[in-house]
Image (cartoon, rainbow, N blue to C red; front, side, top):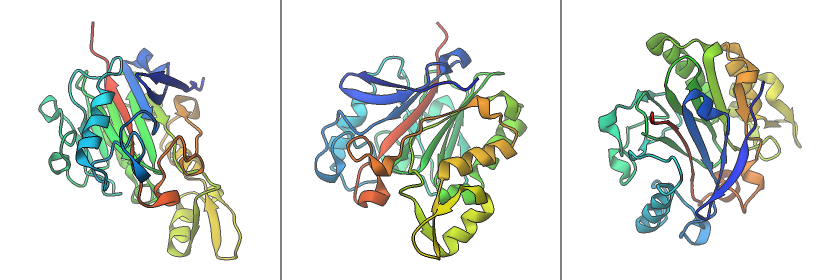
Length: 272
């Protein structure tokens, strides 16, 4: 049975969550852009240190997340994302990497895995898909940043294969949440990008104006890859929201260029 998502408001912040995830020992937060102190194109909950926003405002915005129920108590871990396929395993001593400073984040890393309870894993997004993973069979959390380049680079295949090889978790035992990302009405492609994405999932190509252009359903392509890897569709929840089409709710690099970033977060629950 496909689990449903739910929009929640807490301490002036808004986020999507999957109420069923605590059943498998994890919690997820897909943050929206409301409730922060940033101004201009970063208004208001900009959580990305890799933007042109004032660092003190980003730190204040990030501090507000720490007040959310069940968040932490360890500081989140982030990678310095590179639209690639590198995945790192985060240990307890890595808590806080990339949280206060970008230069101590895991370098060139678009996927994180941990078995440490109470230590959030976070990825920054502003159109790319945030893919958060836990498992039925053992306590584990993973956060994967999936843009079109990462999809082509095979980051989803690498993540599922690594979980099977190194953690002995079968794809059928994974539980996955895919957060808001750019939708097919806003994602128009052409040239080499079109050719490469067509190889990934041809059904995700949709008609667009102009012979050499197409719209692309990034979420459908991700679901296709996960199905090919053996993850049942009933194990995947999709927050079907387009970041590029809803300026009040989400940051979007494709819509705006200079803009903020949301965070998608997963953490294992601490045993009581």
